[in-house]
Amino acid sequence: MKKKQKVLISKDGPYLVSGSVPLAKEISVSGPSGEPETRKKGKEYPLQESYALCRCGKSKNPPYCDGSHIHSKFDGREVANRDKYLDQAEILEGPELDLTDAENLCSLARFCHLAGGTWDNVENSDAPEAKKIAIQTACNCPSGRLTVRDKKTWKPIEPKLEASIGVTEDPEANVSGPLRVKWGIEIESADGIPYEVRNRVTLCRCGNSRNKPFCDGSHMHTGFNDGDESLE
Image 1 (cartoon, helix red, strand yellow):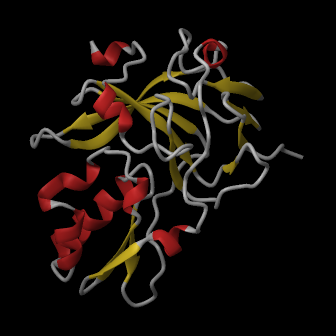
Image 2 (cartoon, one colour; image 1 turned 90 degrees about the vertical axis):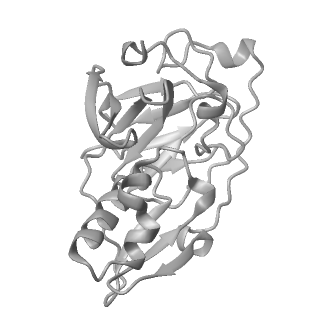
């Protein structure tokens, strides 16, 4: 039987990944507007049954932990809201789509900015092109802050993703981004309580988020760079 794929958050230490979860760089690609529109896969790391990923932002062997959290006395306290996504989200109603938006989960990836923004396109979702863009941009939201739902059934429209972790890079902003955890991989807190299982989650790896363990976009403000060649 295949072992459950899981991310265990260690107290003031790394993310302990188990279950042979694929790991690769994911690089955002900007379009004519100068904002990210798609992603391309970068370096693929060797598949391992288990490994430890840095979350203090100090490792000299990123994305893996090298023990730097000990020397830097990293404070990794988890302060994120434990409520379920729908209990945190606000709802924007449109003619064909509704949008659920949990702003506190925003990782500043900016895929939502395309063609006037996800919000405007949801409000105009009776127009086929606006509806298409609303779905595309919401599904590209790496943190799952934004989710569009069919107006009639209120079922979420979610992208089909490979169960894996993406080590994100944002060349347009010249920063290294969060860990993109995909396709329902379980995330368990240091106190042993699992977070809600979701299709899309972003975990902080710069060490500065004020919404740990989740990314809050702090890598943008601090200029976090793990030395990836795509940012050179």
